[in-house]
Amino acid sequence: MKLNHKLLFGALALAFACSSPKETKEEEVVELSGNPIFEGWYADPEGIVFGDEYWIYPTYSAGYTDQLHFDAFSSKDLVTWEKHANILDTAAIKWAKQAMWAPAAIEKDGKYYFFFAANDVQRPSRPGWDPDNDINHYGGIGIAVADNPGGPFKDYLGKPLIDDFYNDAQPIDQFVFKDTDGSYYMLYGGWSHCNIGKLNDDFTGFEPWEDGELFHEITPEGYVEGPFVFIRNGKYYFMWSEGGWTNDSYKVAYAMSDQITGPWERIGTILESDTTIATGAGHNSAFQKPGSDDWYMVYHRRPIPNEGRDHRVTSIDVMEFNEDGTIKPIKMTFEGVEANPIQ
Image (cartoon, rainbow, N blue to C red; front, side, top):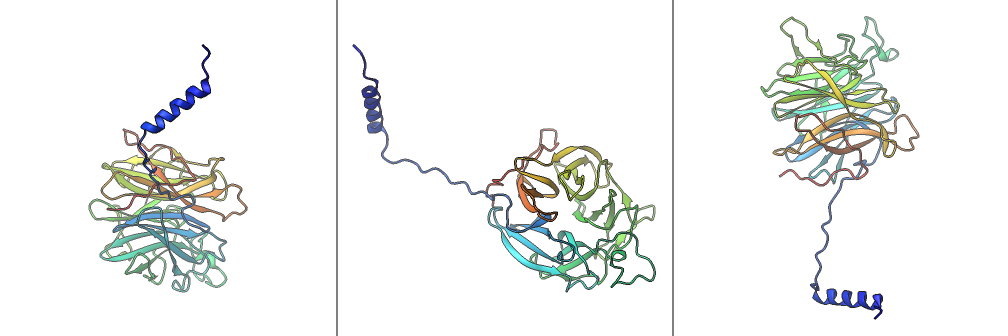
């Protein structure tokens, strides 16, 4: 007897349908941040947690004549970001006349301190400089202060905190780190040199090292700019950018040490261009969800196709570790990360 397969499959399907529950469970919807995580051209993102909120302080990515203010972004869950417009601009920083970029923020004693680079100093200032016609000879790293992480911020010192070259490090790309003993350190430097200095108690200057110097050079192999440090399981991690920020060679490498002062030996690259997603990925930071081992890297990248030097966007992706504590290469995505509120 020849079987009619269509009739057989139809009977089986009917039997299955009759025996199955009438109600079906709806699929769980997973919220994702998407990349980039907010609209606009933004670069050099500094990520930090204040209370129960994630904060990102980026550079407004534009030409030097237009890069004259900062916006900030906050989120309760990494997915929905609120823009805090114009938290600081050159109207509040009288000595910053050209450009401001690469911010870093930290809280101390109920105040929020906002560090930034300005004026793109090209060589040490000299006696007799003219601030209106000789702008690239004055500037450096400045500080602003506010009562809230969203500002508004005002000039803290009325002048740069660092306005000169030490160990050939251009005074830009500062990061401020609070160590486990409550000490605050600044790592900074462009032109392939990185310095570290210990901030004094009121952030008006630096405490000398035992040899009397204010800054020690800690430049690892391959370093160009963009230092960032964090601690995990008793180990210090130092990240930095390599290559050229204007092109596809830009990438992130890192080192590990038992102390903030190093020594720092390069381990490898963990973020670089992916021609299926974006290029020029670099100048990163990272944050951890408090009370967990959930880590995220925040960084900028160039969309494909890219039509301008300053067309950079801020993105976020998961950062994971191997059993030995080393960092797994970051996988760039368009999806971003899942919602992860701070409890």
